[in-house]
Length: 57
Image 1: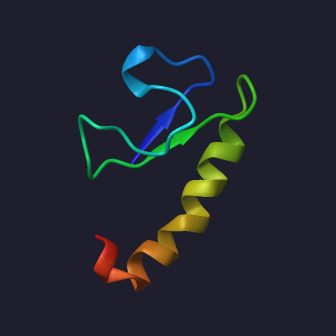
Image 2 (image 1 turned 90 degrees about the horizontal axis):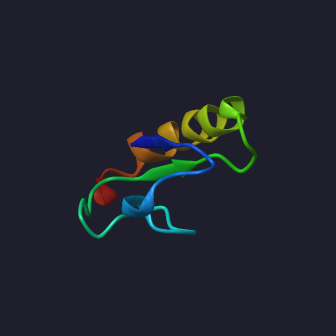
């Protein structure tokens, strides 16, 4: 998992939660400039789902 800033560079593309270069990587982007709390909150919400759904990972 990677926390991506609101204004990220080209390699992270746009409007995606994945990347063609790293197929198992999950991207969590800022929705608002400087708002990291929201990014890490989404990560924290997704973690239990990931742990219970072993088929995806």
